[in-house]
Amino acid sequence: MAKNQASLLLQKQLKDLCKHPVDGFSAGLVDENNVFQWSVSIMGPPDTLYEGGFFNAIMTFPEDYPNSPPTVKFTSEMWHPNVYSDGKVCISILHPPGDDPNGYELASERWTPVHTVTHSFHFPSNFRSHMIERANISIVLSIISMLSGPNDESPANVEAAKEWRDNRAEFRKKVSRCVRKSQEML
Image (tube, rainbow, N blue to C red; front, top):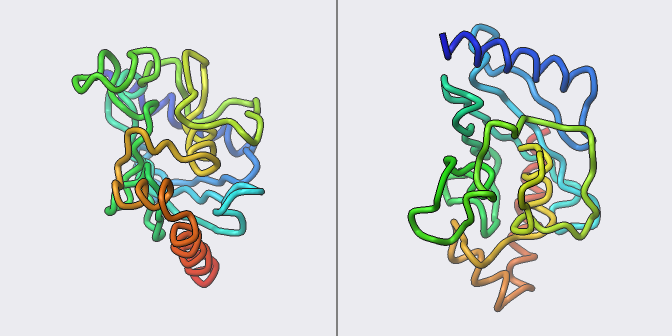
């Protein structure tokens, strides 16, 4: 039953996304017979180090969506404090609901079933991913926000976070290489 409801909801959200696209983002099914796995493309946000990049990712939804969050994993090379070396995105909105066992996040910052793939509103360009609070926000905009302002306080990639803080020139160089590689893959 839950899988069927999740499937219907995901079909609706994908249809809505196609009707009302979000700037800098596109999505489709990896396999037309599996609505639980989406292929997504994210353009690097303007006025960020990722500008000009075309980054691909896989968004995988659990069978009990929206009660549990999806996972997002970049398949394009990505150098970012909030992206593990295997490409998996680590932001609060994608963490399971409830209290953080490590005490880093408030329950209100984590996944709740009101979150969806996308909503039609925009954050200011200086919005930072760790500022997300109790708003009914989208996964897509959270990822775009993450690219706009890394959260180095609770990093998935410690090396990238250290460079972001201590050696911004080297960080920029690695991000530029990722952007170039993503452009070559077009």
